[in-house]
Length: 364
Ligand code: PHE
Image (cartoon, rainbow, N blue to C red):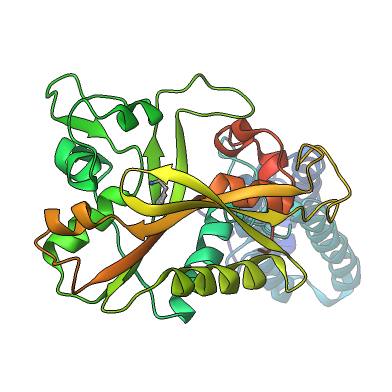
């Protein structure tokens, strides 16, 4: 007789033993108890399911253990015992399979993430329309040999005004409602990027041919037509024999590149303290082609920039002899060019960061 042995999980006895050991559960009884346990098993996480697998279906599990006991079952009882064991095994396997989805679930208590879902796409941003247009302006002038120059947005009086032929108390200073920096009355938020031209003339050897994009500030009440900050692109070319014809030809090229070859151009005399003669340049309205609309205020023309020949006083301020060197300068508002190009009719849209507005410039 072979005595049953104590399993660390469950006490197992051979079928043969149970015939001799009075009061000990038979194999059939043990299986019945275990089957009840399996039927009642209702795991809630992968860990419980795994414990179940180890206990019943693992390499040292109860199914294996009870199968080894088959050896000691007398031949006449083997068929019955085999069937019983087989059913027991199927029951355990069925239960395990029924809860197999728990294996893929996150540990209980943790976040449930379905790793089979497609990843969240990262929305592509768009370039700001002002940057799109500024880049285009800059690249047109770069093709003509201009290079980009930048400078500080907080400027001193000399670079923003005085050196540009606008000494203190010059009435032209009123043309540009200025923000002064409270800590230092000599400092202003630059009112135009002509201040960069001053800095370049001060430091760079001639000839200079620069385009100066940047943000400028003026003390204006914010409305659809005015803002306290906006963007400019100003150009400067100083060399021997630079003429007004060069200025016109340069600006014609800019207009045809920016607005198309059908665009007409006209110059009107104007006044800027740092240029003489000075002019403003209009282009034929790109929306109505001259027949009259709200963009051109029914005149057929839209103003796009100011320009002129660099004033001799300004050249002298930087130690340049105006009899030897001449130059031209021009300045345009990037918002204005953008308004014409994309028919944006409210300046405030540029700085409100409304995604519905910005999205319209996707891919530019
Ligand atoms: N600085 C001028 C402005 O801001 C524009 C300008 C630049 C005009 C160069 C003439 C020459 O209004």
